[in-house]
Length: 628
Image 1 (cartoon, rainbow, N blue to C red):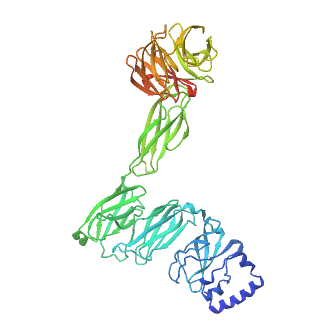
Image 2 (image 1 turned 90 degrees about the vertical axis):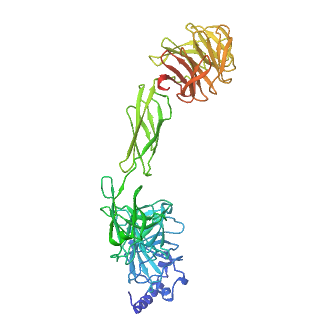
Image 3 (image 1 turned 90 degrees about the horizontal axis):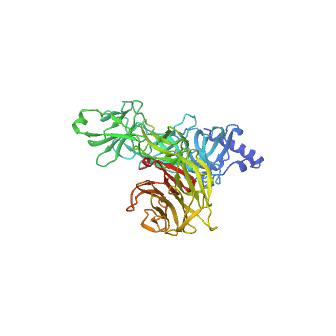
């Protein structure tokens, strides 16, 4: 430290020098301390230019408007202070010298909210009451973090023997990093033994607590999260002179007897449910805790999301006879994840289509889970944690989609589903509304033209079309069926059902029972028609259009009809279901979901049920046993 005489001489020389420079250096580069904050000596000393590294490598910052200061003695370790330009200073020790190097966090300006972690040179005044200057070595910048990427650590320190709070304990820590300038933090506990450290960058930290005359405590893997407060368990410090104190010793291992390092071990009172003594395991998984008092305890060990415990009963006889009580091993066992749901978003899927596969998995240890998807054919075009988009193969069949869910402790769960992929035909620019079948041909009608279109099942495309000669220009085909020799076509625009020859000539017609006739089906003797506004199914005499019987539909918007020789099948665009119906009673005996969201016409070819989805202009061939 400079002598007082030397300092006065330096001040006089420096004042003369800066007078000649008209104060330009300090007007541009420094902020003045409020006079109320400095003693008479510091008022003169604040203009003293300390020796420092070359100017091109440093930046001078002078603290102004100190909001909370710390009185510093020549022997104590320094605490945290706050200022307008300096957010926090982290100091490991203070010496009798005027300059010491520490890490600190600062704001470049009030407008600039970016916090920077810098290694700097701290200059104290003669009386060690306030910090005057900080020389910032820009080249030692460690990291830059905005305020929103920070959190808070809070906790409490007690005496392991008396359970009393401990004031003045240095709580410090360092970030898990291999770099030489990883973030560090420090704080001293108050009279209640509590500490709260703010502006901590998000990350994982080693937290230490120490005080002279006590053993140092270490917490490993303390996680700081964005905008969150991390509340530490009670930290207990054991006095160094413990020769007459009964100790608890044990170890923490996993099922394979591998030691668990860095596990937090604490003694919990079975009545108060309160942590009394706390420590962490060493490289061998071993720990030592002081015996607080006689009674019943739970000895708890935890690390990350795994924990376990053993129950202890400490009697007076045991405590007096044994200086060290050996505790049984605490064994960590991992709960593997389990899958509660795996399903596709659609039950009926065509070839070369996409479907979303969803999975729900849980882990009792709240471990983070990883998802691994697989399929025997097709491919995944998008993969997420809880869902994947699978593109189906070009060939119909049954295919397996699977997922394996793993935690970070080698626990895993597997599940798979077998998905029937049906043959399907894209109708391209045509939007068919109903269809019928005859000799390996599908006959389709749409509501935009007056054609009956023939689709070959072997080629999967339109091969010809029949023009229907209508007596009026306005029409809208909505249903079709075939009785073996002629077609029956429903026209919802004119509320008519036409009997049409194979050449497209109108043979006869009659009024439909309802105002909006839709799908048609032939049961070998009668015509069946469905009306989607009246929600009814009608049995009709094909010769004169007389309604023989009717019953209500099961859905809200019935569209298509088919007859398989024993049952009627009805598609409904309101419920997106296909219903199997006893035609003698109208009772639904079975049902399954339609291919997409807009099912229309149905027909049965003797083996398969064909269904139109107007929304995607696709005809699906359904093997009924795959869906019932």
